[in-house]
Length: 114
Image 1 (cartoon, rainbow, N blue to C red):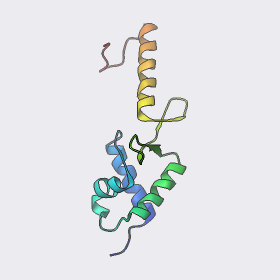
Image 2: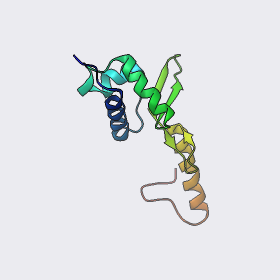
Image 3: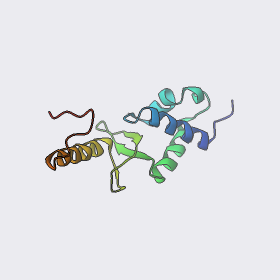
Image 4: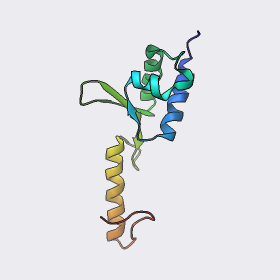
């Protein structure tokens, strides 16, 4: 069977991450779980090349996992345009929400004060 192109793999990874923005996985997990339509044609090596390109473009974040491996996730950009992990970005949004409440703006719809 022909190997899927790097561009096709990259597009599928981004499609998955847009539907599941908090997803994180290893290259092997991405091949198995994120790329089911391409599973038989997306090699680990091709997927890693696609991920490297997405990391270079600032669309995907590569981080060391606590177990010593590497995890990939959607690169979240904070309001200043800096790439942050989803946890850092979430913390930034919480600070922004709290500052708005202090200024009298209240919390955004759907937000409750804990």
